[in-house]
Structure formats: C-alpha cells, structure tokens
Length: 278
Picture 1 (cartoon, rainbow, N blue to C red):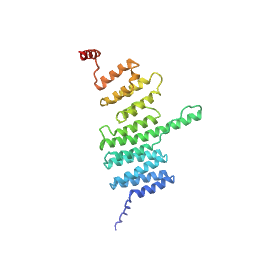
Picture 2: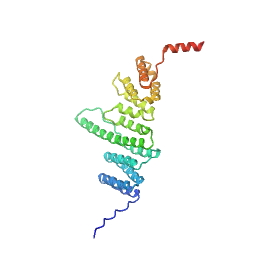
Picture 3: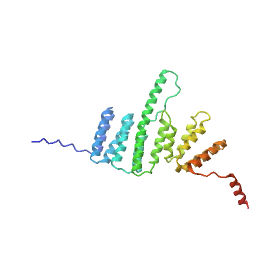
Picture 4: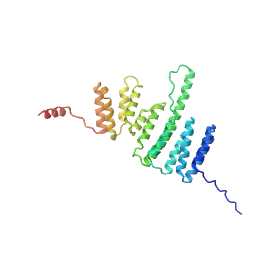
C-alpha cells in the first residue's frame, strides 16, 4: 500500500504571517525572519496569490530596513519587485508609492571627513565600505523597479520618478561619485529643478576653475529629446555664462551638435531689425 503524501497546510491570509514575522524581527531574530519571509512569499507566488506575496515582502523589506538590516531589507526589496513582474502588476501611482516607501527607508549616512589619526582612517574605511553596500543595495532595487515600470506601463525609458530617486541616492551616498551615472538618471527623470540644484552643489565641490566643466559634463549627458531641459539650464545660468563668452560658444556648439539647433547668424539679426523699422 503506497504512502500518501502529507497535505500542505493551507496558506492563511497574509496579514497573519506579517504579524507573526514582525514579532520575530522585533525579538532580534533578523536572519530567521528573513528566511521565513522568502519561503512564505514564494508559496503565495506559487499559489498565484500575488497581492498577498507583495504585502508580505513589502512589510518585510520596510521592517528590516527600519531595523538597520540593510542586506536583508535590500534582498526583500528586490524580491518585492520580482513579485510585481511575476504577477504582471501594472505600473501606477499606488505601486509607485509602495516602491517609494521602501526607497525612503534606505539609510543616508554622511561619510566622515577631517581625518587626523589612524582611528579616523579606520573609521573612514568602514564608512566607505558601508556606503558601497548601501548604494549597491538601493541601486539593485531601483534598477529592477525601473525595468518593471518599462514593461508594465511607464514611458519607454522607465518611470521618471524612479530615475530621480536613483539619481538622488547615487549622488548623496556614492563613496566614489560618478556624475555621468547621476546625470544619466536625472535626464530620464521629471525634476529638472533638482537636477540643476545637484549640479550647483557639485560645482561647489569641484577644484577652482573646474566648475564650468562640471556643468558642461552634465549637459553633455542630455539626450536629443532633452532640449527643453538644456534650455532651462542655460537660462538659469545665463548670468554666469555671459561672464565668459567662450563658454557661451561652447554651449552653442552643444546645441547644434546634440540637438540640431542651428546657430543664429548675427547679420541676420541686424538686417531683421532694420526691416522691422522700415
């Protein structure tokens, strides 16, 4: 007589598991809770109960991050996005807000400066390592979210809001700042004012004489469909640009080569004014 396989226990409503795992986390058993978040959410996904899997993973990611468990929180954050993809969940404001809530819980910790002794150097080394882990964790999460947004309803370059989140985190937390990456995501975002303020902030960190180069590098990251942003940046910095005619010429070159903007012939402007007077 063949033995029957034991029946698997039916999955309870997700809230029961959310409450149970929250208690385990609050007791300090972060690793044990992590394994349960992963295994139980996988069962909800297998049962095609995607909404409950998302609730569980979202709660877990937020709770682990609140408890400074960066690696666990980042892992569950990525799993949350993977569940969005598996469930073919549409990109909308509600789900964007859920992604944003997780993002806002990723720590932002300034790297120490003014080193004086070996203890400070050791502290800096540890801080740089921790910053690298933060950036890797948050970047993996947001890059996955951008890919999800492209597939399920956002513009072809991905959610502008998600691009801005990633740009801001890269700028504020990267131990080795890469303004090309930061600009890449700001260009695909929807907050030109924030992009401009970031450039100004970055200029303040440059060596004397290199601040104009910082602006030029950022502008060179703009795509052909970003002419309005190019014009906005140029207008915002008009007073500074006009102090150096050569820089204005360089921007004219950029406008022509990258955006197809034809240079205005000065003589055409003079004759045009004369004809208007006739």
